[in-house]
Each structure stands twice: as C-alpha cells, then as structure tokens.
Length: 543
Figure 1 (spheres, rainbow, N blue to C red):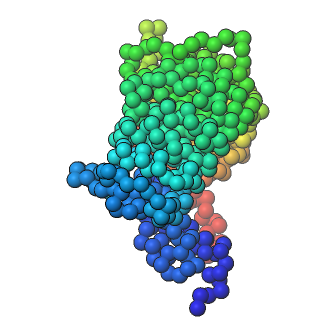
Figure 2: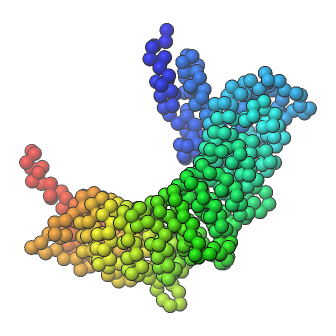
Figure 3: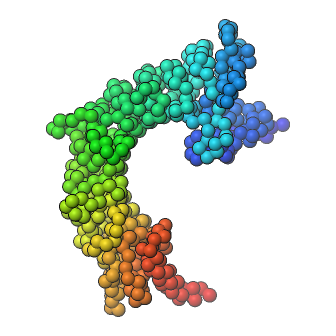
C-alpha cells in the first residue's frame, strides 16, 4: 500500500524535480538532462510517480528522433549511413489517429528542444540525437493531427552548421503558443512567423551560424521582425553585417525590453569600414524606458559613442562596452561624455569598458593616456557598484581622483582599473597607497580592487595609524600591477599600511605568476604575519 505522503502532488513533484543532473557532457545545467536511469526507475515505481517522472524524462529533447521512433515502424527507416539517418518510408501510407497516439502522449511533455551540434562539446563520442532527413522532418511537422507538434514547448535552441538546410522552410512550425525563449542562428526567414505563432516570446537570441543560406550571416535583421515582438524582454543580436541604427528606433518602441546585447564583429583589422550602416539625425533621441542592461560589442570606440549618443536610458543599471580594435584618448574621452549624458546619474550601477589590447597603444604622438579629467566624469554616477576599465592605454590616476571617486561611490563593491599595455609599469604612477585610504573609509562594501599605485614612498608614522583609523573589513583581494624595490624595510612598511586599512586582506595578485606578483607576495606574507600577531592576546585569553 502506498504511503499517504505519496498522495501529495507537491511532494511527488519535489522529489522528481530534484533528481540529480546527468553527466551528459554539457557545461550548462540549462541543457543538461536529469539522470535518466533514476527517472526511469521512478516512472516504474508506482502510479504516483509515473506521470511526473515521465514529464521530467521527456522535458528536454536533443532533436526529434526519439519522438519519431514512437511512430509505427512501417512509417520510417534508418539509413545505412555514417549518421544513421532517420528517413520516411516510401511510399508513405495515410496515417490514422492511432498512429499518432503514442507520439502525442510524449510530445506534450517536451518543454525544451535543442537542435544544434550533434556532438557534445565535452564528450565528442556522445551521440546527441539521430538526424532526420529533410523529407521526414517536413512530413512530421505537416502531418501531425495536432496544430502544434510540441504544444508546451518553452525553450527552443536552433543553430549549428550541421543542421540540414532543407529543414529551414518548415522549422517555424515548431514555434508554439507557449514558446518563451528562442536561440536561433541566421535563419531569418523563420523569424517572420515568430510573432504570429509565439505571441508571448520574451527571450530572443540571434547569432550567425553559417546555416541560413548563402550570405545569411551578413544579412541585416529587418526592423519589422523585432518591432512585432511586443512582449520581448531580452534580446541578443550577433552578426557580421553592418548594423542599421534605425533598428534601435524599433527596439525603443518595445515596452517591456529590459536587456539588450548587440555584437557586430569584423573579421580582420584591415577591414576598417564602419559597421554602422546609416547615420542617424543627431537631434533625434531614442528613449528606452524599460531597459536595465545593455551590452555593445563593436569594432571601434567611435561606433559605440555613435550608438549611445542617440539614446537615452532613464532606468539603465548595467552598461557593458567592448571595442575590438582598441581606442585612443580622444575617442575614449568622447565616449565617457556620451555615457555621462545618456544615462541616469541616480540609477546606473555598473560600467564595464573593455578595449582589446595590443592594437593602438603607441601612436605617432607618443604614449596614449587616459587622463584623470576624463575619468572624473564617472563621479557623477552616485549609485555605482561596479566599475571595470580594461584597456590597452595607460590609466593616469592620482590620489585626488581616487578620493573624489571614493566619496562619489559609497555603494562601490568592485573597482578594476587595469592597463594591459606592454611595459605599463614603466610609467610613473601618481597614485600612492595613501590614495587607497578614501576607498577604505568611504566604500565599506568594496570587495575587490585592481589598481596601479606607486608604493615606493610608503611611510608608517609611529604617532598615527595609517588611514586615521578608518578601514574596510570586507575587502579580501587586491591586484596591483606596479612593481617596487623589494628591500625588507619597504616590504614591511607596505604590508603594515595595507593591513591597517584592509585588516581582512587575504590575497594580493592571487592569479598572477609574473615577477610583479613575486614582490607583492612578500607584502602578502607580511600582512598574514601581522594578522597572526594581532590575534595573540585574544587567543591567549581564550586558553
């Protein structure tokens, strides 16, 4: 007799939904199926577990071959080829409702369908699904008695150069009324049907995969396709084609759009053409009323500025910008000014700017430096929690700027100013360890710090504690890129200073194995020793 606890549906679903994920080779848990033998055992345990276990067992499918194999065997056959392709038997007899009963019994349980690379990225010998011939694929979708083959499909991933091209003309029939997320390659003809067949789509990823037909990866996304998706909340757009800024005007009309990622990539450094297809009137401004996060990855810093300059983001919290081919100080300064003008000073919390190193570090006019004047524009944003700047240029910091930033950002949690220029340590840095004191004093939530300072003149007074007694007890890790002369006295002074303002500091240059890290490792050891010494009286009292 079944225990009364197993008559509670919530408890049954809790048990089934907590079956561990199987080791199927996929790195992301979103596409890893639960352990199949465990689910099979649950489904056969008793009636209480049967339906819930089957729901989870069939919830994620890698292709449609398992469903095809639920049809009568006289309708399909397996070809003797290297893929073991499933194909339609010829001639095809008319089907009855009974032929489809078993398939429909399982098809209604499918929530996620993945059509992508047929091999696992971590296990190339793991077969994900049999290939369906194009004829069988089209027949399956067009002959099903149900209007939608997978009526409860929520997530569809469709990309990969090994998907047969003759799937494309009928693949849109997989779109159903419950579809929530679509991750698709360059099959733009499929997207034309999306707003009609899946009116509640909220998450859309479009990226090149070389399988949408000739030159499909270089076709611009039609504006009308995107503007028709009114419920859309998240959009990722990756392409090799020029980006028409007019698409932004369409995106700005979507009332629920909260997250956007646009990646427009060039292939070679020699291709210096702008990836912005058209100019946009400077006087016209596009307001994204709901947008909270935007990521832009373009070739040049000037393109980033051009896009941002025609936009207004009253609710933007996260801004992530990447320039493939470096930058120069004037373009960087212009971009910071554009950020200052287009984002709300009381809402923006995260700024990440990355310019790819090794491209434009040295020009004819000499060393390229981001000045303190440029960086001071960021102090207008009063709710800043995360500032990351990774660039091939040199970053000119001084103690006055660090104090201004610390006082402007009381909620700061992560600060990373990192120059990736060759021999950047040869440039004399005006910022010193004294400049870190305001960060310890005014930024109590600061957890991580990457910065270049000159520690050579650090001095510990016997009459006053470094930092005036102010300290940050949250920060655990610091990365310094500036080396220094490692005499014993200097190491002790630097270690004592850092311990005074960051008493819980655990690691310095933790993942850096260069000579720069070696000298700072001595400082880290000094900090650890000082922490042990500070605990002596307390430990003695306890014993």
